[in-house]
Image (tube, rainbow over all chains, first blue to last red; front, side):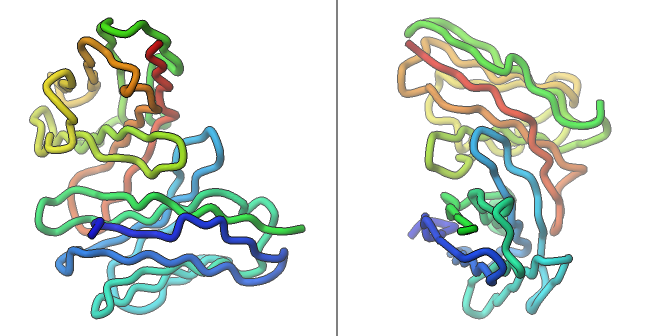
Length: 111
Length: 115
């Protein structure tokens, strides 16, 4: 099992709807998780990090962490065409103290 | 500088040649990471430094790859005897240190093409 797994997509969501992106991880001891957005040809940019169980909200974005089930999700409300990008989930692995990325999910917001 | 910088932005080389990729992290950031990203994939961990020392180099694919950070700031990723399979975008990221919620800030990357 890969350490951080994401569905590669593409995920197509109508403009104005909620986009839901999911990620699972294998290292139960992992402490913190990150969501990055990457536009084509650009480097990743941080959207949010989360390390406590539950929800964390920042504007249109909500990150959710469930350590018992080992999954992390990102919700994007009121999706905009500019949200179309690849979303990378990353986890800070506890056992060897490094950050591992998933393959990313391509999100396409339909105008 | 304001952010992480990487040079060169693009590097085209021939199979068998030696290349050096440079990363200049955000001032004061003690942790520095190198990743490799191929098309359609997430960043693949190569190595990270905490200060001057390589804290984990388990992601380096083989002994052709080597990285240094002699003064705890700028880092150089060195690739010997390049192969076509080394073609990728090499990303560098820095963070203030290691910890639960340490955020990495990425540079623009170096696109390496091995002909």
